[in-house]
Image 1 (cartoon, rainbow, N blue to C red):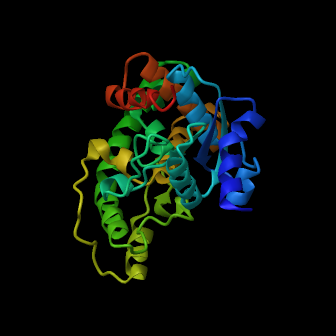
Image 2: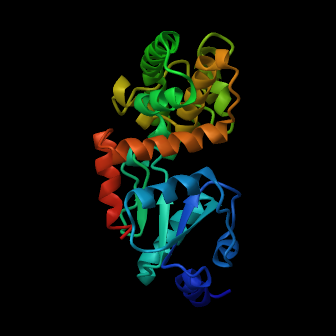
Length: 292
């Protein structure tokens, strides 16, 4: 397939799906550019649900078809093609990761980023957690007390996480292996107790595996109130899911991680629509130009 035919196919792909714009995002199976340009992709992922929810929050006037194609490197390559050829019928949605803290973000009108590290980070907030909890269980004095204990633990976990988040950022900036193991989100958590906590033993072991005897000097100072935004999103979301499971455990409620995250996405959009989480709301409203 020649470059010209590839770009032409990319520019006209929206016509095949009868929409104004194709939106590519992460998540799902990793696909090659050839597969992507052939129209392949997964339209049922959590990433798709998140970004389509954002477009509805923004009351986007154009019609969109969202697809997860898995590979961020390929998405960055596609974004470069979009800019070179001035294609406006395709939009690329990316997780920020640590790029924004290290000056590596792509500046393009055809690329939008999550507010925090990833879309998972964006939905991890106490107000959404509490709202979902009380949509799930009856608001009784016992439930109120359980929620207050959970929120206090949320704050403690955030404080404990700061130094490891800072270490992870420093390692990323140095192009070294990261201390929070990416292919195993649960490796950095211990969920055997009353509430989930950091598995510091495993995290320290990972640091030794990298070849360091102590945490690297921090490059970015992270505040506890902001750590859930900055840290690896899948760790933050897994923590919150297991915290939810622990808090509602006495209610015998069964909820999968995927369902929990879908509900948390909906809660996040609701809180923004109602004027809460003002910084996050302002950020996503700034994306209205891209989704216009």
